[in-house]
Length: 169
Image 1 (tube, rainbow, N blue to C red):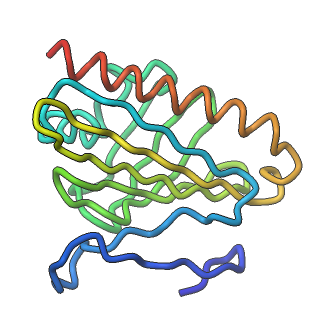
Image 2: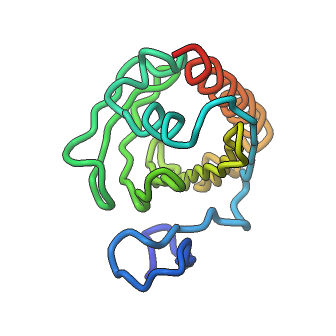
């Protein structure tokens, strides 16, 4: 499947199931100019972490950098959502919704395309949260260092805020 930016995306099975609906994760683009990842351990079960992160309409109640977010339909693949983070308006589309293990989306803003994936792993007393994002486009190439540093800080802050929110509720 090709995109308007001219690269191929790869679908990766995330479950053993052969169900055609929402069992595949679009991988981040490993060749993108900006590629970052992070992880954190949260003292809460995956269901709780999932419920907070997947409640897109309420991101602004705990994610300090998000001033507005609106899911434009049901929480399922191909549903879009619009949000504003750090003054930038972003239009995103869910590609994977598999509670409470995976959620992922693509997003477009300022002529850049991002692929953003979250994974939740139950390790008994905690949930290991993994997140990764790739960003590409001519602005991503032009401002690679600046955007990578900014996105990295935002990702770390998002993980810390998710942890704080999950552990206090």
